[in-house]
Structures are given as structure tokens and as C-alpha cells.
Length: 158
Image (cartoon, rainbow, N blue to C red; front, top):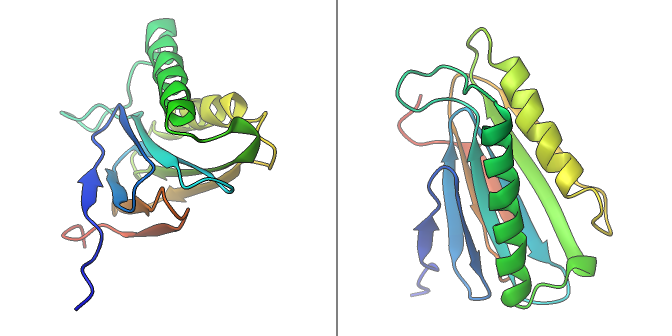
């Protein structure tokens, strides 16, 4: 029997990088996932950034401090990707955003997604970006070793 690879959950406002065969996963609820993998080396990672406050389903107050924190997290993510052997000139970047169907979410979602797209715009290939406006959460999984990405409805949210 073939054993599925281990799955590691990436919490909001965190990231994981690996060059091993495993699945990095996150559940998007008013958040985005940045999936990066090197198409020449077996290395990649997943960054999970939120734009909705967890406790009350309200948009985050996107102050300069909040956006600066997001930029610092992206910097640390990229540094760790390079440490794992991913070469920036070979990165493939995919961004998946989930925006709940709640009034006032479009602005914060667009701001954080645009920030991530601009940050990774210097990649060799264009950044792939898909936005989902829906009440159901999304589950994003990345195989950092092979670069496969799966996006589907999160279990238990139907």
C-alpha cells in the first residue's frame, strides 16, 4: 500500500518551506496563500496571509504597520526558500485568495493580494493569481518537492 506524504498545516500569518516530499496545507478564510516552488530544484513553500480578523470576521485595519509586517513575513519566506535551495530565477508563484461574501471585504482583500502580486512580480514567469469570492472556505495544498497544487472546498464548510 502506498503511504500518502505527510501533511503540514500552515497557520495564518505564517509560512513553511521544504525540499522534502510532503504536503503543505492551509485553510483560507479571508486570507491568501502564496505557493512558490522552484521548477528546477525540489524546493518550495507556502505563505498564508490573512486580511480578515479571526475573532469577528471583520476586515483587518490595514495600517502601514500591518502591511509592513506582511512585507517582512514575505522577506523571511523568500530568504528561507533560498536557504532550502530554491533559486529565485526558477520560482513559479501562484497566489490564491479567498474573500468571504461579507460587506467591506473587497478593499482589504484587494490591497493584500495586490501587495503580494507586486512583491513577487520580478519572478521569471508571471505570477498566477486566482481569487475566490464565496462563503465556503478553501483548502490549498502544495507539494513543495514536485510543485503540484490542489485547491478545493474546505471540509466541514458546506
